[in-house]
Image: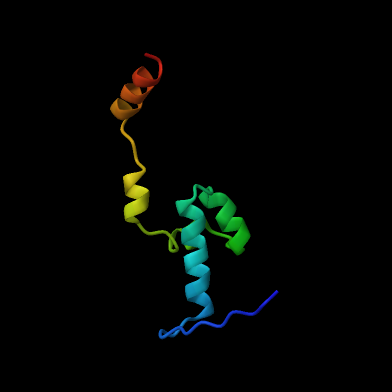
Length: 76
């Protein structure tokens, strides 16, 4: 396996990597309780600090009306 070096022009800390990883897991549907356990947090409040609203997450929210419409289209 070859080592690939990249230039990062921004200071990156372990905390930033941890936050990014937790956010990535949330955006891919991993339950907050699993992330809490994975990160070793005793309180879910601590894990909630890692959450923030992303445009991708907001775009994936469907209203019940959207779901009914999609269901009807699939079954016709």
